[in-house]
Length: 257
Ligand SMILES: C[S@@+](CC[C@H](N)C(=O)[O-])C[C@H]1O[C@@H](n2cnc3c(N)ncnc32)[C@H](O)[C@@H]1O
Image (cartoon, rainbow, N blue to C red; front, side, top):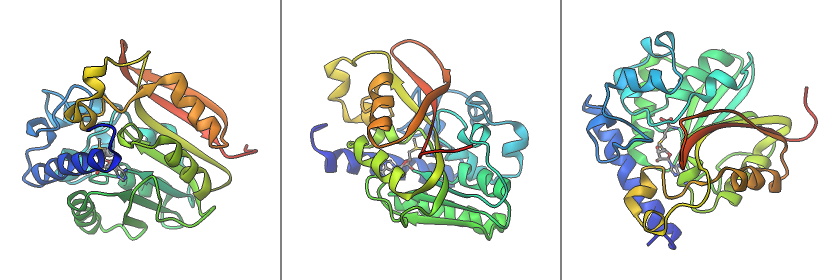
C-alpha cells in the first residue's frame, strides 16, 4: 500500500477528517484514531500543545476546536521571525492554529494562507477564522505537492508535522521554492529519523498517517531541501530523541538578510 501515493493520501485524508470531526465535537485528537505518540498523546490537549512549544498566551484566545485539532510536532510560528506585513503560507494547515497565530503576528497589512487537502479540516479552520473575525486569513483546498499559490507571492512558508505525510517530498520542496519570493524563507517543524525505519513500519498505512512511516532520515530530508534550490539549510532545534523525533528546520531562497 505505501508504494501507492494516492492510496497513502486517501488514508491520510480519512485519518485527519476524523481528527477534525472529533475536534469539532470538542474531544480533540487525544481520543481519535490518529492519537499517536508523535501527533497526539495521552494527555489533555492544552498540555499537549504546550509540550510542543505553544504558550498559554498563544492558545488562550483560540477556539477550543482549533486547539483540539492541533496535531503538530512543534510551533513554527514561534521561530519563523514573522514580521508585520509579511505573507505567510502554512503547508497542511489543519484546524488553523498556526495560520491564526501567524495572522496575529503579520497584522492587517500582512496575510496568512493555509493549504490543506482535507475538507473537514478546511471547514473547521474556516469556521474558526470567522469566529475569530480575522480578515487577513484564507484557507485554500489543495495538495502541498501542487500548491494552489502564485509564483513568488509568499514571504514565509511554515509547516507543522505535514511534509512527512507527503509521498513525494521533492515535489513539496520544489513547490515551496516556486511560491516563495527571492530572499523568502521556509521554517518547518517535522518528523525525521535517525537512520532507516524497519520495513514493517514503513509498510503500515496507520503508521504513515500517524506521522511515522513517511519520515525521512534527517540528512536525506535536509538534502531534499537543498536539491530544491534552498540555501543556508539548518536545523534550529530538535524535540525528542531516538529513531523518530521532530526537528525545526530553516532555509532560504537566495540572498537574504
Ligand atoms: C498532522 S496534521 C497537522 C495539522 C497542522 N499543521 C497542525 O499543526 O495542527 C496534518 C495535516 O496535513 C494535511 N495534509 C497531509 N498531507 C497533505 C497534502 N499532501 N496536501 C495538503 N494537506 C495535507 C492533513 O489533511 C492534516 O490536516
